[in-house]
Length: 161
Image 1 (spheres, rainbow, N blue to C red):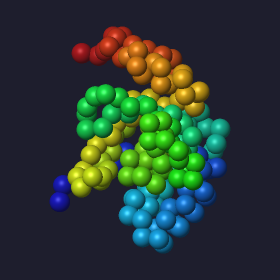
Image 2: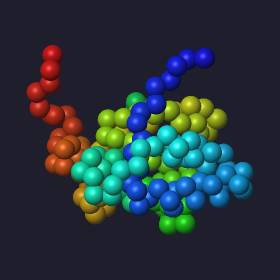
Image 3: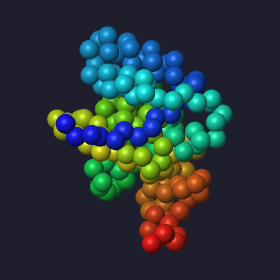
């Protein structure tokens, strides 16, 4: 069996109890995605709600820009609890395969998840707790949020050679 590296997961202290209850209840109903979510919660580091590092972590209610299977286009969605889920055009339920994979990941992280009968990889490009238009509009203009600022993803500046 191949050794798969799993990125660190960080969950704010205020999200932890609700996520745990939600995953446990859904698992009791036989939801396979809940089992994946429970595994991610169990291996997570719990951080204080005001920890500065949470600014680059996918938390409940945050907007995340990501790519799946190393492809384009990028997508931007808000991670929400299943009872708040209203639109697959703007939201991802935490009880979906992708939503469970996104919880607690840091910008730049990638993780495998299973959906539609196969394994996919999701990579986090940016995270924001701003208003939806602050995330979605730059997505269509080719901008990403990098270190709290909008940056043209074709020109991220100098890179190490």
